[in-house]
Amino acid sequence: MIFLYAVCNHENMDIKQIIADCGLTRAEICQRAGITRGFLSMLESGTRSVGTDRIAAVAMALGVTPAKLRPDLAALFADT
Image (tube, rainbow, N blue to C red):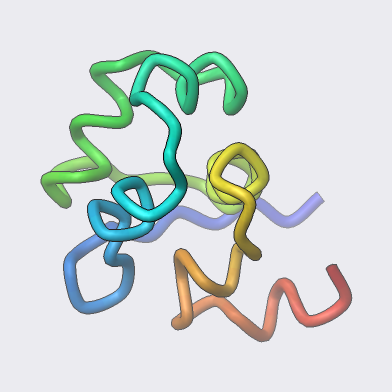
């Protein structure tokens, strides 16, 4: 399994807007994605590194593709 880490930043991932658009609470997103509220907060602020497996879980919870969250990694998710 390939496991990559990349720093999420506002250039690569506009998760705040996606969260606002999805209609879920942050608690619901965290529960669906299997992450903590603190982890989501760090993603939102761009201070947390995240692996591709977590991006996939967060994307699924938000109802978007992983490439929507991380356009810079779109090629890795081309078959999903």
